[in-house]
Image 1 (cartoon, rainbow, N blue to C red):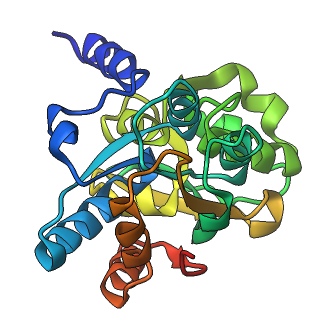
Image 2: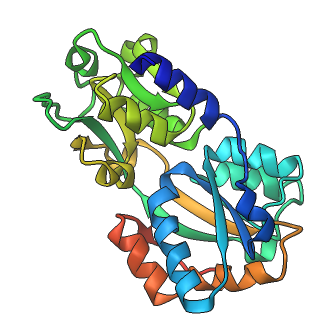
Length: 258
């Protein structure tokens, strides 16, 4: 299989939100943004060690997860990479509103393959198109995926969106966008800082100013039909061990779940 076909298969798989078979026996099922993959994996292991309870995670774009929950997914908890998709479910009465909390924060960064010598200073009207040098900018789908929406807003604020809009490779979620750069399929990409930290095959070229996009906030809430056992895991997310894990992975902890 060629690398291009491999990526096509990866993207097709990423568009589906499929629960593993172990979810049937799990105590808690969590739908979470793809950028939380590493941190929540570690938090889930810590929770299992402390309580003996199993947590199964389904990671994908927040947009795909929200729509799956709307279609009766079986999820007990939702962790979104932005407020909009949590609002989407909240407005439809599909989450337990009184459990909703803004849990984590993140930063938006420009990345390149680790062996690349590209140097860019992010500033108004910076020459991003020139830095691409004929290649494409890897971003999560800006029409639906939070990371892509933040990227579009940041580039628009800085006055360079129109220069690169026809030079994008749109990914199903931020981890796929990361993979394009890690595999040198794209010379530059825009992801969260935590994603960049997770892959040694990329390096951070620069950070986007906080003023160029809305704050990156990860809300969490139980779903309307969450099982009672899910409340305990929600509380665990504010445990000192969970907090340290999030911070180790580069997140800012904003608050404690209710």
